[in-house]
Each structure stands twice: as structure tokens, then as C-alpha cells.
Amino acid sequence: MAKNQIVNGEEYEKKADKKINNWGLFGSKYEDAADFYQKAANSFKLAKSWDRAALVFIKLASCHLKLDSKHEAATAYVDAANCYKKTSPKQAVACLDQAINMFLDNHRLSMAARYCKEIGELYEQKQDIDQAVVYFQRAADLFHAEEVTTSANLCNQKVAQFSAQLGNYLKAIELYEQIARYSVNNNLLKYGAKGHLLSAGLCQLCRGDAAVATTNALEKYQDLDPTFSRTREYRFLADLAAAVDEGDVEKFTNVVKEFDSLTPLDAWKTTLLLRMKKALKAKEMEDDDLT
Image 1: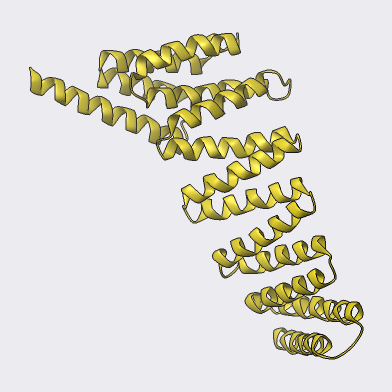
Image 2: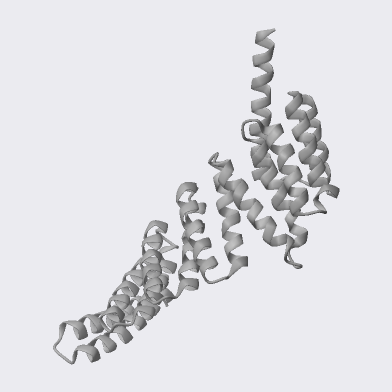
């Protein structure tokens, strides 16, 4: 079955190449070639010959560009990217970048945003956090431009999460507070605001003068969401700030254990809390050395 599809794909590709290289009406020969390239690419896909399928989709994109059909060309690059995802994420990103530029040229901002997000996810899988931030931020900006706020906020959550991992706490705080503010004013999302405020507060605690910053932030968050002071998340942040202010590692550990027993902490929050605990221990040792 696969071998037959490879043979079919090669035949269709040869016919397409021949159409392009022969004399003929400019538009007609590229239309005919595009039809054959589409069939060739589909045959290679059925054979799971992903690289060959991707290369043919790129040829198909070139045909559409000759016909001044940028949307179809962009779609062909997306098809190529989907094939390269099986074999070469780097090539997949390159094809998606081409598609994004064409969607932007056609003022299809939501489509461009969608594929910026997809590239962000590919970089996330590769653990290339710096590049993931670039593309998730770009996706968020494009979604905002189209007023697709929910999608923009989902991308901004990723930007905030990765910014905190990279130590850019101020950026993370700004984004989490922005998302929380939007959530409070949305009946479907307001229950989730406390989670975003908790994330912002944890980022506050990772900064210098953490206890003071967090105390001030909690007052601000109470104004933003009047229900926040009655939540377990608020009490958790307040107790953490007190432990940090007192330089009490044991108290800090017990506060985390108690919260985790009721509301299990995810890996991201655990990472930030371990950073705080490490800083507290270092401060404790420093104080011991002075006494």
C-alpha cells in the first residue's frame, strides 16, 4: 500500500514539474501543476513519507504564489509544517513562519495568531523558553488586535508562566494581574481570578523586598477582587509573606505543606516556592554566620 502511494506520488510530482517547465499559458500551467502537486503530496502523506510530502506542499505553495493566491499558499505552508512536525520541528517552524507572513499580508490576523501560538507550543516542547515567549507574546498581541480576548489571555498566561521561570517577575506579575482583572469582570471566568492573583502573588514573593511587596499587592488584589480576602489563596500568600518577613524556613515549609494538602500545587508553583525556600535558607545561614 505504502509503496503504491509512493509510486503515485512520484508520478504526480513528475507531471507537475513537467507542466511548470513546459510552455503554456502562464496561469493555466500553474493551475494544472498545483492540482498535480496536491495529489502528489496527498499520496506521500498516505505513504507516511512526511519529508517528501512537505517538500511537495512547498512546491504547491510556490504555484499558488505564482497565481497570486496568498491564502492558498499559506495553507500549503501549513500543510508542509504539519508533515514536518513528524520529522523536523525546526522545518515546521520555518514553514509556519512563511504562512504567518502571508496571513498578515492578507490581513488575516486571527489565522496569523493561531499559527504564532502553534510555533510557541513547538518551542515549548523543545524547552526553548525564550523563543516560546516571543511567539506566545506575538500571538497574544494579534488576538488582542482582533478582540479575541480569551485566546489572547491564554497566550499571555504562557508568557507570564515562562517569564517567571526566566526570572522576569515584573512582566509575569503585570500579565497575571491583567488576566485577573479581565476575569473578575466576566461571569464565566471570575471564579478563576483567585488563581491568577495567587500566581501574581507568588511572583511578588520571588522578588526583592518580597514580604513588603506581597503585603502591598494583597491590598491591591482585595480592591481588584473584593472576594479574594476570603479565599484560601489569599491566606496562603499572607502566611508565606509573614514567614518570609520573619526569615522562618520551618514556618514557610509548614504553610506550603498545609496548602498543598488541600489544593495540590502544580510544578510551576512548586518551582517558585523552592526558589523562595532556597533564598530563605541562604539568608538564614548568612544571619547565623553574623552571630
